[in-house]
Structures are given as structure tokens and as C-alpha cells.
Length: 200
Length: 66
Image (cartoon, rainbow over all chains, first blue to last red; front, top):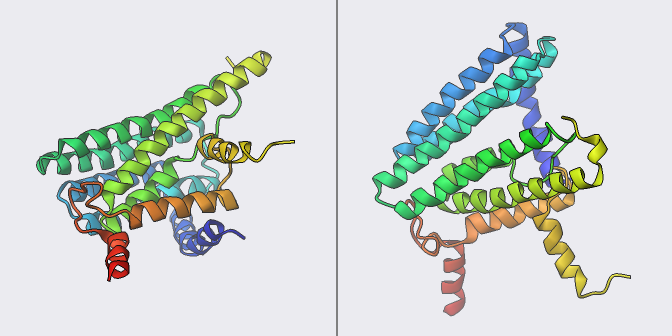
């Protein structure tokens, strides 16, 4: 087993307990998704005030909701096409909220350099999701590139808890550029190699 | 047969054009590289607006310079 695989398994134990509780209470997964967004907005406010450790804890709670909504939907047999759409849209709002919190902080500190770095990281993080969504309207699957949402979330948590948000913004920014490029290249190759498999 | 000169280029290309799943050794290696960058790079080098000092790398340089 790999290191990251082991960490994932350890984290699943408490999460399974929360999932079971939500299923027992029959909480609708779409509500869990929306509550996750509200908590992420609170985390963004904490980031904007420079209270990174508090923001880290709030983000941790928010991401529990983010993570469990799909699992609860499966266990409640409440999986729907709209649920998937709702989850994707709310996830983008959550992503943007955290970046906006940081942009506010850096602008308050008069650091236009980091306002730009964070804005670019935000732009490419959003483009990472968009390129995949658009590609998968043309080809069956476009899951290439390293910097996806779970990686961004973990990096935000690491940056908040260890006060290394600047380095985290660099990593998210640079690797999101690569991820977007990967998806464009992959989609181009797939469309060239299998024009008959184009979905739409 | 692939020449030795192409190996670094292939490693770089595979790191750039990322197709590995999570929980693979390649993924672990990338995570370690990222964490090393985040935690070891002195905040002063990045002009970090919220963190200061030279970090663990600076501390190691100071120790080695003694």
C-alpha cells in the first residue's frame, strides 16, 4: 500500500461514522452540499482576516460535508443527475470563496504581487474544472493532470495550518497551469485519434 | 531501445503530462516533492506576506555554516 493510500484509509474510519449518521437522519445530500458551501464561506472570511489556523479548522469541517454528500446520496438511493450538477456548481463557488478570502487578505496587506498570484491560481483552478467538463462533452473521459480539487483542498489545509499559504498559492498556480495544458493536449489527441468517438 | 539521454526527458514529460492515479508510487513521489517545496522553501525567498524567516533550509544553512 502507498503512503497516500494508507492516509486515505485511516481518514475513512471517522468519515464512515458521519456518513452513517447522515443516512440514519435521512439528510438530503443536496442540503449537505449547500451547508458545505456556507461553511467554506466562513473559512474564506477567516482567511481574509488572516486567521489561518481557524480557517484551517473551518475548511476541515466544510470539506467533510463536501466529501460525504456523494456517499450519502448513494446510501440513500438519492443519486440524481441534478445532484451531480448541483455538487459541481457548489464546489466551484466553494473554490472561488477561499481564493477570494486570500485575495482580500493580500490586498489589505498591500501585496499586489500575491493578489495577482492568487488570482491566477484561482483562474487556472476554475479552468481545470471547466476543461474537464467541456472535454467530457466531446470525449468519454478526460481525467489527466495532477492538480484536481482534492489536491487543492489538502494544500489549502496545509497552507493554513502551517502558515505557508504563499508557497501553496505558487504550487496550486503552477500545477493548475500544467493540468489545464494536459487536458487540452489530451483532448486534442483523443479527437485526432478517434474522431468517430466524439460524443456530441 | 531508449537511450539514457531520453530518460530524464521522459521523467520530466511524465511529471508534466500527468496520467497517474492517486495512491500510486508516482503520486506519493509528487506529494513528497510538493510538501518539500511548501515546508522547506524559506518564506523570505517567496516574499511571503504572512510568514517570515528563513525556514528549515535557512536553519540548516546556519547550522552547517557554524
